[in-house]
Amino acid sequence: LRLARLLRLGRILSRLQVRSGLKYAQSMAIHFGLHGIFLAHCAACVWYAIGAFGGGKWVSAKDPHNEWQAADAYVASIYWAITTMSTK
Image (cartoon, rainbow, N blue to C red; front, side):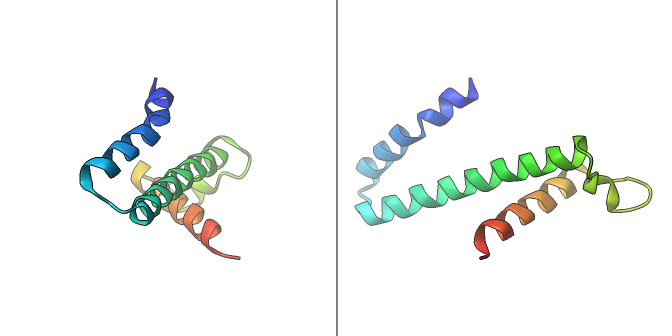
């Protein structure tokens, strides 16, 4: 169900471009940025799943009491994803 909503993103962005009067270059920059954010989110979710359910267990390595909050783990995952995507 959510994937179907995601597939409508292109149509929504094209309607936004027409209604707002954005230039094509501005629209493509926004489109590229949103895709980058979505890709970073997906990579962060995969990285978290590897740490939480895989053999690495990096999620439990923060402190000896294993008191990771979900927000802490997501921030660490999204940081890893953005850093990995933006470095050589």
